[in-house]
Image 1: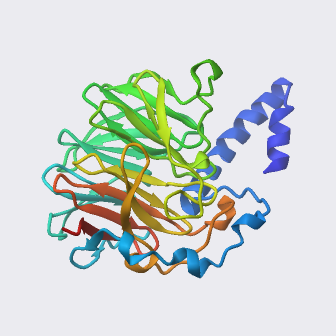
Image 2: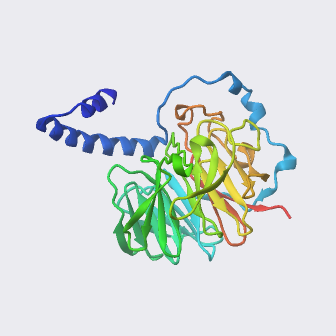
Image 3: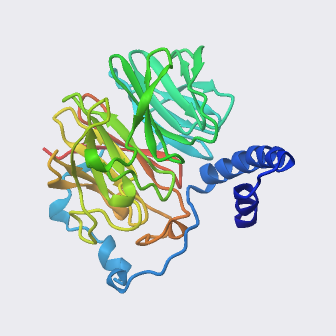
Length: 347
């Protein structure tokens, strides 16, 4: 890969330019597919001594911090590569993966399959429509599976999350490390998160292809900045309002190279975060105060290695996605066994 990049960088002649374009097409398609399958950029680095903690101790969560309980049995999706989960206002559950979207009833019974032309990398249900990202583009479907539109085809992109507002649609692009803004017809309106010293924007750090967004009721876009271990709040035209979250080995913060990896919001304004590596799902208020823990490795029945990921190469196993319904139930997509677990707050 380094040799290919070197050749691309120094191509100057017309023949070199042609070779460059051909190489870009082959390399880009292969590299993006590789990222989707492995969910990790291999960037090696030495683990600092400060992180040399017994993993067993870090994985244990004080029972007094756990504020949720599991509801029912895990929902088996039957997918080989589950990528995203979402739930609509009626409690209908959707899971994406394996070139399809699965539709489940509120009781967890599979009712329908919507076949897609490629592997979905993101899914959002809004206004009676299904928005799905297929790596470089966004496609719209009806709940019955009819394809309604194809737009936002972005060469060499990796769209990992979608947020839908009244007049705008946003897509997180993990490869370009920006959030793309569109109107409802798919016309591009601008980029959010590019480095801008005058506006106090440091830029997104996305070491691995986990890059999540949502629109909060206050009208601001929330964006996970995983490499900086925080959640940032932006206006739709790209002004950074504030951020919360900090790197920490303790339960109150986000550990490793790139967390949180997923974000959802409960009806009361509580944020749900999910982490990979040292897997855990937690609740925060909008100032970043920890409100409690939804689940840790034991509660999730996690069967993959538990580790603190100091580089993406440490977290080649898959992670979690999260969603929430209007009743406050939390849906956790566990991407190792491809199951969905449902949690609710303990009253």
